[in-house]
Image (cartoon, rainbow, N blue to C red; front, side, top):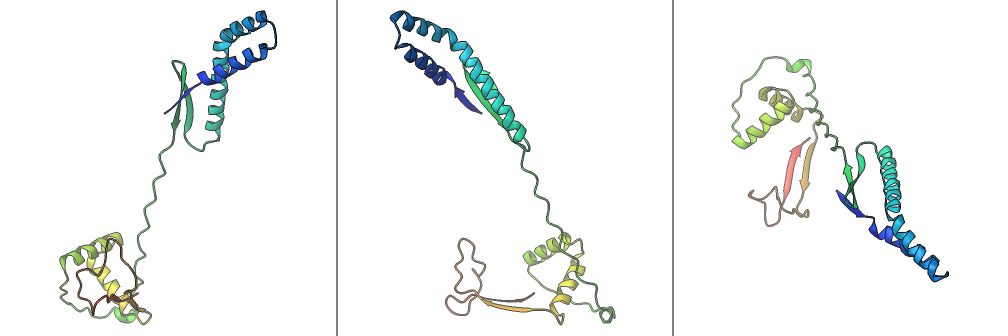
Length: 185
C-alpha cells in the first residue's frame, strides 16, 4: 500500500492564485486568499477524481490485478493487487527407453548388483519419475550404454573452478588438481 498526501498540490494551487492577485489592489489580494481557502475542498475532490480515473485506466490496461485508490483522512492510499505468478508447469517425464531390438528379447540373465545406498535411492527416484520399476529402468540404462550408438565422454575438468560444491571433493584424484570425468551418453 502506498500513501499519497495531496496537500502539497492543493497548497501550490492556493499559492498560484494568491500570486496572480499580487498585481491587483489589497482588496483583490484579500479576496484571492479567501477564495483560495474556500476552493481547498473542491481542489482536493478534483485531484482525487483525476487520480481515481488514472487508477481505473491503469487497471484496465493490466492483464491481471488492479489498482485501487482509497481515501484515508486527507490522504490517498493506493492498493495494488497483483495476481499470483502462474505455476510453473512440471517438466514432462523423460522419454521411455526405446523398445529392445528383437534379438535382445531372448533368455533373461540374473545378476547381483552392489551399489551404495545413496546411488540406489537416486536410481529409484529416476525410475519413479520415468514411471518404471527400478529393474526396467536399469535394463534401459545398461541397454543404452551398450548400444552401438552409445557415445563415450571423457572430459578433463581440471581448469574449471568449482564454487561452493565440488563434485570431485572426497574422491581420490590422479595427482594434484586432476579432475577427470568419464562416462557415456
